[in-house]
Image (tube, rainbow over all chains, first blue to last red; front, side, top):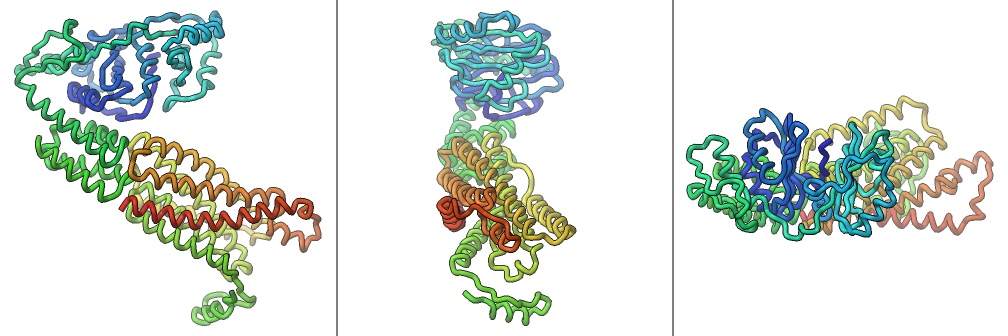
Length: 324
Length: 264
């Protein structure tokens, strides 16, 4: 069972037909997401793990196989273009849980499909603690699954297939461990992961997307994947597309900063969510879409800030959008 | 304060009102507390009308709390025991509405989704009140025992929902502590701390049968009570009940005025 934790939802069950993958990933990057983006297709699942906007791990589960990292991104583009339906969700997670999820998605399996009753659990927990592992212990049966997250040997949260968020008690996961035939996987984050590659810097998603979707004007500047590209450098985009994309990104960042400034952290999240709902920042050129976006932000902000502040924020956002 | 003359004049002005036979004497502290609830109710109702949908449940809830408290000024309540039952039921509905609003607020901070309409809340509340009145009216006239049960239900529901509300408000605050309204949310949390003490002390007196309504009942039945052996605890609980009834009403009025200022 492919199970990833759900934290604070930033977008939930957005139909993939409404999604422009490169724009969506840009937003996650610019929004400095720490958490994961989950794509749910009829015949496959994909997860992208972000750490402060850096795409640190990608995985696709398809036909019982796992495809990872750059190949997973390529596979995601294909799935997005070929699948007739599917949904997209983004969840913000704490740094501790994100590191444990990185272990779950990309780390090597220290224990792989071992039957629970054959494991000396006390010794295993002692080992996690003494070796200060950052890891995820997955306990599962064919019907159910639960996760226990560890950061530097300490338990930082629990999650199971019926959870709506990270839990602080082991109750339900313990019950799963007690089911007949329950098995466990332990995936550990490798020590060498202090310097984490940004996958978005290795694969030019926009070029890949435009090429795959058959845009004859797209000119992929870097063959994907290009392992030699420094991870911190942004992907070199096609010259024709570079200027407007960069400008839109700057404006989007400015809009998010304005929401943060006037309404606080939740205001920023609200703006990110509403931008995601309307598509991308470039559609704000359309006055109707801009109004729709401002109204949506206002509706939520009424619970967080004064009318005067909301009015000022709307004016400031409208001024930013006018530069598009 | 003797209001017999005022109510007799009222009944002569509106002949359909039941006649007043007993003197209507209301002490100043009761009058002042109900007045505070009236101020709190007016501010919260006005607040609910001009604000986001989620505040509607919270605002109406506090308005209904005034309605439930106003029975102390109702000169007919001793004659028509059905009215007291209705007052207590409305008091219970009020905390259900407030808790509903607070849970929706928490849901908003986690999902940033607001669904539903103000009209649904207004109509839903009206429907629940009408159903409650209907159920009370269809049943036998409440005896003093039954009325005491209504009072205990009210205190118990308030007590436990206050605990839940304090928990949710703490979680809401954690989610939005950098928002301009965050201090107002802390004030709302304080209201529930005061209400918890108010209703908790009332529930305590009910549970150990040291409340006035039980003492009134046994005055006629001749049953014994152990109240004299525990007068210290009883006096303390009674003083908490009275003080925090007043403090809660003041804090609700103050909190909504402050929230109004923050959201203007």
